[in-house]
Every structure is written in C-alpha cells, then in structure tokens.
Length: 620
Image (cartoon, rainbow, N blue to C red; front, side):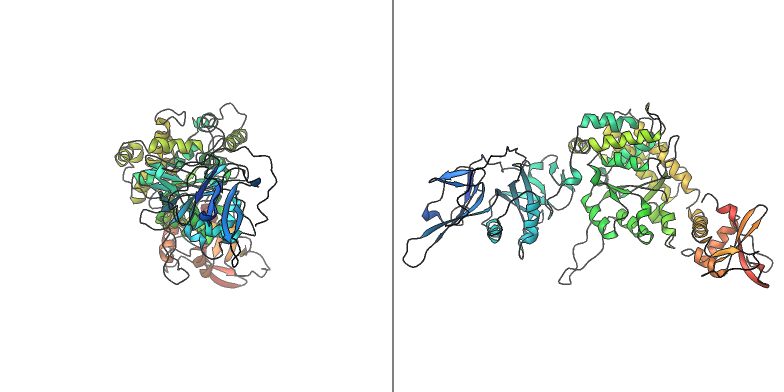
C-alpha cells in the first residue's frame, strides 16, 4: 500500500471560488469527484461518491478537501485507486496521491475543429480556484513543460508519481465542449481576454494558451478611482486625452475593417510622454502590460499577438536596434508575422493580428532609421504617426492645481500604478452590446472638417482616418461613462494631434525634409570623428574621412568628399537628393561646368568637395 496514504492533518486554508463562467461547468461542492475508464465518459460528477470498492478499480477520484475512510485520512487532490495482485494471493488495493485538486471539466477545440485541449479547474496552494484551458499538445513527450506551467499556477504534483499525472489528464474525455480562442481579441461577437470572455455567449468561449499567466491583463484598484485620478486630469490636456483615446481604439479596428498602425509621441527627455503611455496602458492592465522597443522583432511579433484587437504600448524607440525599426513598423501595421518552417520543414501558420500602437521616443521613426543608414518610406511613416508633445509644461497644458509638470506626471503615474484594467473591461462590456454600425459611425467622423484635409494626398488621408478612429474611440468611452470628459473633447484632442502631425511632417510627401534630416544626422554622428578643420596647417589622420569643415563669418560649412556625400545620402537616389538639397539651399547650385562640387585646397592640392551650409542643418 502506498506510503502516501497516511497523512497528518493540517489547518485548512480558506478558499475562494474563482471559476470562469463556462456553460455547463461548475465548481465542486468540496467533497470529491470521480471518473473511471470503464463507466464514466462524461463530466466528473460533482458529488461525494465515497471510496471505490475493489470491483470499481482502477479509477480516479478528485477530493477538494480532506477525506477520512476506515480510520485513514486522505489529503485533497487527485488520487489513483488501483489494485495489485500476485499469483493466487488476494488483490491488494493501491491508493496513490498524484496531485492537488485538478478537475477536467470540458474538452476545448477551435471553431475549425482543431487545437484540442482540456479545460482544467485547479485549486492553488493558497486554496483559490482558477481555470486553465490546456493545449492537449502539451501532453507530448515527457510532459515537463505542462507540469512546469501547472506548478507555476499553484498545483502541487507528486515527484514520485508525476508520470501518473499525465495519464490522469488523458482519461476519457468529458462530454462538455467549449470553443477555444488561441489569441486575445474578437471571437465572433465575444471579446476574449486571457482570464475572461466578454459579450453575448461569452460562457462558451475561452482563451487557450500554453502559458497560464494572465498578469498583463490583471486588474487593480477601482474603476471609479481610475476615472477620477487618471481620466479626469486629461481634461484640457490634449496629449493625455489622445493617449487614453488610443487605448480604447484597438477593439474598434475589426468592427470598422480598419488597418492597424499607431501614434508615436515624440519629445525631449522628461516631458511626460512615458507618463501618457503609462496612463494608456492602465486602461487594460498593470505596469507589465507596457512593452519596450528594446525587444527583438520576434518578441514584438509575439507581443502583438498577445495584444491582438487591442493596444500595444512601446516605450522609448531609441532602445531599439535602428536596423530593425523600419521592419517592426511594417510588421505592426501589416498585422503579419514572418513565415517560419516547422520541425518537419513544412510552413507554419503565419501569426496575424490587428493592433493599435502607442509608441514614445525622443526621435522620430525616420531619424531612428537614419542611424542605420536607412530611409523611412512613406508606408512606414504613415503606420506610426509622429506627434510632437512639447506643450506649456512638458507634455501638459493644465496641471490641475499641481506645482509643475513633473508633479503632474508623478500623480498620473502613481494613480495608474494603483488603478488599472477596469476601464478596458467595462468598455468591452458596453461595446459588445452596442448595436450601432461602427463602420458608418467612423465615416461620420472621417467626414468632419477636422479630418478632411484640403488637397490632402494619400498619406494625409490615411493619417486623417486613423485620428478620426481615435476620436471615435474617445467619444465612445465618454458616452459609456468612462472618462469624465465633455462631449467632443476627444475629437478636439485627436484633431489637434492630426494638425501637429501635418506640421511636423511638412508639405509634400516629406521626402525633402527626410533628406535634410538624414544629412544632419550624419554630421551630428560623425562631425568630430570624420571631419576636421580644412584650415589646419597639420591635419591629423582621419579614419574613413567624410570631409572637412570650415568656419566663416556666418557659421560653419561642411565640405563633403564625393564618397562621404554618397554615404550620407544612402537610401535616396543620389542625383535626386542633390537636386532637393540645392532647391532647399543646403548646397549651392551647379556651376558653369554643371557640377555642384567646388575646388578647395587641401594640403597644397585642389580637391573637389560638396559645400553644405551648416545653418540649414540646425534644428533637424
């Protein structure tokens, strides 16, 4: 007989029932449940069935509390009741404790009849109940990954009998069926979060993942306090109101058949742009909801899937590898990951998502790409719209009685760390029951004069459509009672952001400005290392020289070698870029010989160099 049978009594831990609403599945009454391979092919009975007789073995039982039989005590958990017989000797009953309470309540599968799993209801070490839709594929091999996840969720598993645990999970499937969703976001009319499904019919859909953690979407504090301390201070603060409106936009993308993309808040250090991002993420979860640009492209692909149909917050673009920035912007906007091969060499299913991005940084997308010698194409720039956040007090206009911008930022950060997650869920509760045609509603916002630029080109129209959707999201949140803003305030904030984007972008398609910015970035990065004074009598050796500089009465000019100028303008058509620089007065017009270079004497010899007016690069 197993030596695990005799257990000393211990003090019970108070339990709280935390079982997700699933049709036909209920929490145990506390006694036990049973299932045998021969006689029970449905959901384990929620009743005290007692201990199995000899003829009922082998079988499984799950006890939610301590049990006593024949003077022996059985600890809560999954028990295997078996028999052992040698020769003609009477059979011996073997009673083996396998794990703490784990019930198999339903079979899960996606809408296509694949990705099968088991809906588990577990009792944690602290006595709390929780559910997890376990992918059945985790039972392959040794099952170490599966046991690791369950151990992390608070399940206790006998090291001696851990292989029996996998056998228990593969007993005949219960009759109850539940639809599983493999990603956060819309599943029909239901919005699926890692720990909850919201909307009509939510009880029949559950999130299924190989990871049991749901910390990104946790809740804290109260909705009322969040409205008073995070949302209300956005009144008269367009940048904070914009960020919060962006946070509510993600769930509307699918309803309006809109493309993904985002807004990039650009400003100097300590202006408050990160505070705006913290406020936005508090709509959906705690501090760990926010991501950073430092993550690799592969990591961002996984993050985008986790925040599908929702908000993805990326802080500080300068932390990203400049070589990856453009690709990441494309990936996030297109909603498509990389094509990868499986272990057998066949193509895996490509990850897809829809997400709205709120990004921050001291540099624009284009400037970040310039550091890697890349040029931001129009398709990349319009996926992440640069919005400058320099206001009266950093990113703020109205301090609501606080002493300065830093104090206001600190107050918002503190409030967002205490109250989070409730506003997003309440928004979904209202949105999933709102019968209006959201595509038609968006058309109304897009037709407003604020979002209908005269003579706007394709990029302007795409940007206007995104800001119109952000405005609609903010107005919906206000209508649902989640902001304490006045009607029209969110529209005004989004319209102001659109204006700021257009001003920062400049006229035309922005390429002329990008050429000057790239040239300025090259000088800023290499001015001291690859240039020196052309008037110096003894020029020190310069590695990979790009040119010289010359101080004159009206400022400094940079004299580029042909190779240096080509490197600085890498990514642009060289002749077209020179034409643009000439048109903007950065380099002189071509001489009588048709060339833009001028002869300069260097160490006693004449050298053709491109003169660049340094004053034209200031402020870029």
